[in-house]
Amino acid sequence: MYKTIKMEKIFRFDSIRNNDLLIVAFLIFGLLCLASLGFFIAGKLNPDAKLDELKARTKSWWVMSLIFIGATLINSTISYIAMGMLSFVAFRELYSVLGFRESDRRAIFWAFIAIPIQYYLAYIGWYGAFIIFIPIVMFLFLPLRLVLKGDTSGIIKSMATLQWILMLTVFGISHMAYLLSLHEIKGFSSGGRGLLLFLVFMTEINDVMQFTWGKLLGRNKIIPKVSPNKTWEGFIGGLISTTVIGYFLRFLTPLSVPQVVFVSFMIGLSGFVGDIVMSSIKRDIGVKDMGTSIPGHGGILDRIDSLAYTAPVFFHLVYYIAY
Amino acid sequence: MKIIVGVKFDSAKFLLNEKQFIIVANHNSHLDTMAIMASLPSKIIHKVKPVAAADYFGKTKLKAKLSNYLINTLLIQRKRDKEHPENDPIDQMIAALDSGFSLIIFPEGTRGEPEVQQSLKPGIGYVLTKRPQLKYVPAYMKGMGKAMPKDDNLIIPFNSSLTYGLPTQIISSNIIDVLKQIEGDLNTLKEV
Image (cartoon, rainbow over all chains, first blue to last red; front, top):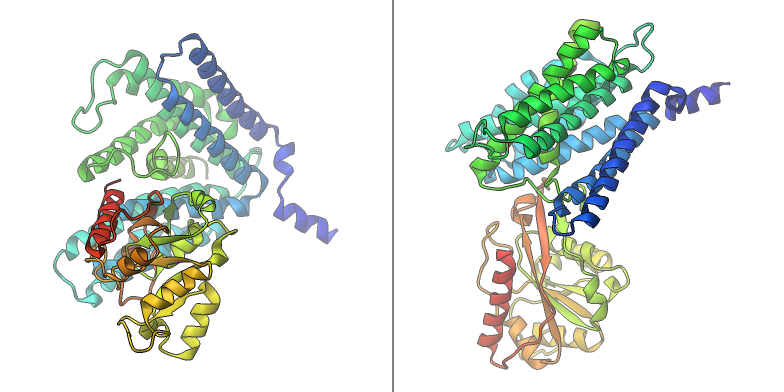
């Protein structure tokens, strides 16, 4: 008896019995099949069309969703580790391009140490410590480490940038992990994994929708200086589609209809903000993509830039409303 | 290596087609050797010897044993020694090549400042002019000096990369020309 309980704890295959999560998983794969098929046919009909980037993107979507769904649905302990790795890679990617001083190395080392700690706090579900660890503890500690090194020229930039990278790539993303640690609510079966799936699916579909609407109807640019591809048509079209999709996926959340519409709208909005914030950084450094780790998308950061914004927004909205 | 430090490797599979080669790389960090070794196909890895300075890696017997055991190093002196040919670095390298090993050489001689390339030492030129049929493979690494610079033993992950050039034969028997050729190759890789 004991053994079976333990096995259940390690491999939470109960998700296979949980229809809500499965529906969304199938939905995601269905969408991907449709996209792959669509681009394949479009490529056959019109061989001149520039579909290579879209095809590479779709292929990467396949890999990413397989990993994500695998990590979320099968075992939630693995999900914490996987999301920690995601933060780690994103942190490394961002700080590598931002140009730190030689004397910042020790402080950067401690910032790396903060990643497992933050995810461990999410894992054990210690909300108070989780929410203050990076904004307060690391905020106070990292400058100390920089000061002890004694190199004061350019120290403000190092202090500010390091803390900002931590907030964006670790604190923001770790809210995804904390969703899994939320206590259960009666009458709401999907739990944290449902919320996580909702958040990630909505954020990514929002990116895709804004991209698609922008490509189809885009005329009036919002902020041409930061991102020439962002248009009012794409933004509003994406926002509306995301909100509508959120309405249909509300079974993944414990929210009522008006609440879920509001939350979906906020996901669309903050996803857009995250996107343009990261674009502005890329503009500043003078690169197009943050890296080359995902074919067609650029680096990890180019993909999770909007998540870094939507995760905390979504988490705190849901936490305030339902928990 | 790939996951933790974040090194992006070029595929080194093409080296399987070469019977013997000398990898010529820029040098910024202890991680350089590790990165090159990690990128090599496991089939040929035991036939490759990184060349290292005896005064640093052979300082104590334990250090020499460890580096020989772990990465199969060829320890050489920094200075030439005409009187004792068995201790002469050039002769040692040639002997290793003649017994079938491939070599990894860092012709800058020392790691130096992070991300700054120094002028090449002529040793590689001597070796290549003595065995002109051998091909050398230029390799350029970026960011390693940031991940683990000289005088610091703490490794901090940093997105870095390792790029290989094509296996090339030397075109001249003049040592200065050979060094220029190699330097040119490394600079082309740097631009990529």
